Amino acid sequence: LKLSGTALLQRCVGKGAKMVQEAFRLAKEKAPTVLFINEIDSIGSKRNNSDSGSDQEVHRTMLELLTQMDGLKVNEDIRVIAATNRPDVLDQALTISDRFDRKIELPLPNEKARERIMQIYAQKMNVS
Image (tube, rainbow, N blue to C red; front, side, top):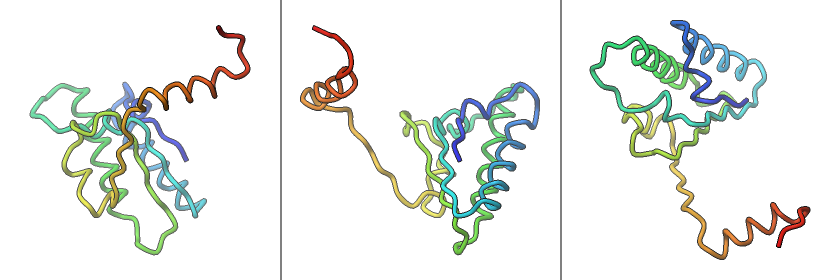
């Protein structure tokens, strides 16, 4: 299953948390499942003391994600993978070892790798 952190940020109060609940329910129903959350920084950034409605919704969505992850049993065939290009802004509650047990960093490609990437994606194009 694929979720986008930005898609979880809804204008309607409680919608993001409800989507997280539904995703985990579906993951359990369809297990074995890999649940991939892209742009997790949009819902999992460090909390502040803001009282704005949007910040509260982000906080509610992240709390639901934490609750659902904590509720997974070791023997359940569900794995949660998340991606971010901003690991520096993630809330510490997300990064404790019981929630995500590995951190894999992919550095930016060097010049040779970028050239190879361009070759792969431009192979069917007429470029000079």
